[in-house]
Each structure stands twice: as C-alpha cells, then as structure tokens.
Image 1 (cartoon, rainbow, N blue to C red):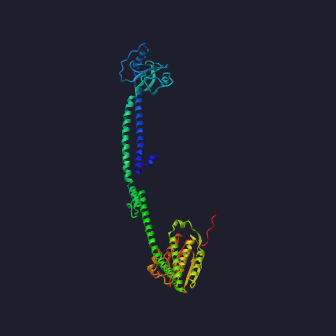
Image 2 (image 1 turned 45 degrees about the horizontal axis):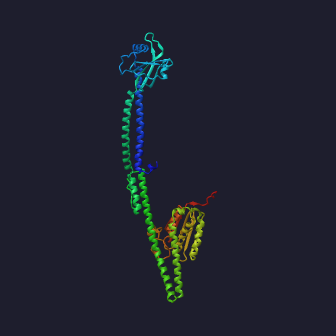
Image 3 (image 1 turned 180 degrees about the vertical axis):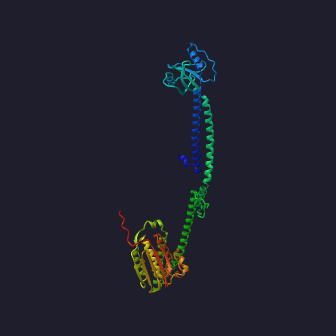
Length: 472
C-alpha cells in the first residue's frame, strides 16, 4: 500500500481501473465457466439417464458374469462403460473394459435402498467418469432383481476438454481486457488530470518566480471539481496580488509620509547640535520653538507608527478581541478627549443607550479619530453636535466641509485633502474608522451637512440593552 501511494496519481488511477476491470472480467469469466460446466454436466447426465442397455445385452452380461472365465463381448470401444455390481460390493464388466469403482450410493441401489444413483467417480485405472446406477429388471417378469444393479459410465474427458479450452480462451481474453483497460485508464487519467498538471505547473511557477499574474484557463461552462479548483487558484492569486500591491503601496505611502517629519526633525536637531558645537547659543525663543517643533514631530511620528500598526493587524487578531461594548460609554470617553483638544469649541451630545460587539480600544480610537477631524476643521468658537439614536451615531461639525469630488477618497489610506495637507495628521484616521466599523458589521458615511460643515454617520448593529451574561 505504501508503495502504491508513492506512485504518480495517473499511475494509481490506471492501476485502479485495471484492477476494477480485472475483478469484473474475472467474475464474469468464472461465472461463464461455471455455467458452461453445469450445462455440460447436465447434458451428460441426461445422456446417461437416457442410455438404454438392452435387456438382451444385460442378460448376456449377467450370464457371462456367472462363468468362471467371462468372455469378452463384442462391444465398441466408444460404448459406455457398463458394469454389473452386486450388493456384496463385487462387480463384473466386459473383459477389456475397466471396472468402475463402487461407491456407497451404488450399493444402496443394489440393496434396493435407493432407486437410482448419479455421481462422479473413477475407474480402476484412475480415469474420471460420470456414473449412473439403476436396478436390473428381469426381462420376463419385469421385476427388479434383488441384490444386483447396473452402472453406466462415460469418461469426463468429454466435458473436461471443452472446459479446459474454454478456461484458456477466457484467460487470454481477460488478460487482453485487463491490459487494454490499464492502457485506457492511463489515457483517461492523463486527459482528466491535464488541468491538474497545468495547475501544478502554475503553482510551481508562482513558487519559483513569485509571479502572481499567472492564471489557469477555465471554460465558462465548466463546473466540475477541476474547474472549481482552477477558479479557486485564480481567485487566490488575484487576492495575493492585490494584497501584495496594497502592501507595496502601504510601504511606499508610509515612506513618503515618514520622510517629511523625519526631515524636519533632522533639520531641527542639526540646528540644536550646531549651536552646541559652535558655542553660539540660539535665542531662548528660537530654542523653545525648535524644541516644540521636535516634540510635535515626535508626536506625529508616534501617531503615524501607531496608525500603521493598527492597519497592519490581521482580521484574526481583531476577531479574537471582540466583545460586547457600550457604544454610549465609548462615545462619552471620546468626547472627554475631544473637549480637551478643543476647549474653545462648543460640543453638545445627546446619547441613547446602545451596545455593540466590537474591539473596545479600536472602537474608541475610531470615534476619537472622527471627533479629532471635527475639532481640527471647526472654526474657532464653532460647535460640534453628537447624537446616538438606535445604533446610529451622527457627528456634525460647522467647518468648511468636504468637496463632493473628494468624498470617494476620504477612506483611502494616506489620502489627504489638498486644503488639509498643511495640518497635522497622517491621512490614516478615516481608514482606521472604516476598517473598525466594517469589522463590527456596520457602515460609515461622510456627507455634506445642511448649512455647511460635514456630517459623519456611523451605523452599528446591536441592541439597546446588554445581552445576559454567559454562565461559565
């Protein structure tokens, strides 16, 4: 079995087909041989039953058997073997013919215990014969003579020779059939596994070259397992290529975003270092401004790195941390942070109870990101309205708003409006919002608000009351 598993799949299929055909052919051949054998035996038995031994010949044989030296009767060599047997087990046959070995069934006929006997036997020289034994009937009285019976036998070679010939013919035909079935199975396996070979070659090519543009051709109407496997492979390579493109784009965008704060940070540090090296201190106001700039750049870098880490986490890592969260408490916590960042703004809130299944830290970060944008773009002394009703969170600011042509791009990574590129930020905040809301099974939209500003609408599935605690 282990050696069979080491063979190629097409070879195993060919062997299985050949084995199945061999079993079927063997079963048919054996059945055919047994049916023919039974038919030939039945024909011989009918011939033996219908074989007539004339009363005259039978009487002559009986008289001949009583002689001290029986004489040979003029019988043809091809005639059936006729044997007279007695209840004591003795026999008498025509001289020149071999006696048939007596069996108990024959003695039972001679003793009158059985009407007839039909069986296979052997002569004294070992020749296989078919024997039919019946009582001897007196030709004058028509009465069965007690203690004596007559057996008529024919050699089984008349049956065995045709059966042997038939067996050889069936064996040869079966062998040809098995070989042909193996060849046909191999051809069918090659044709059937050709798509698998193409798939294997494509996988090996991808593993060798990392070329994810490879596709397996699939006919539009094909719906078999191979076609499904090919479509799955094509979908997988498409997803991998898209993932790799997104990864490369993320790396490129992150490098671009990191370059600006790092350049500014390096410039400020070089100015401070040069001042120390030359012994010419900077004016205190300039020094404080440089240190504040360095601190701001470090803060921006830390925020950018945190956003990148958040986006790089897999869905499985997020799914493990999902739990029932009070959206109301989360929004209130985010509002406290927003009021600290925009003390000059008027932030009002009308929050109803709502519970969702999400990751607590990610959900609060998403709400904070939305409020940060509202604070950032609100004019001095402006207002921000926050409402939560039946799982719908609305955050509306009174800033300049977002142009309609820019709305399709607001959730893209690193995308920033041209008017906002001078403001602090990485362009990842709304991407994190969209991903967090999507993971919680909700949706988020940005639309222009009536009278100016931007309205952010977040819908999350949940309930107004918390679910009952699970019993451990």
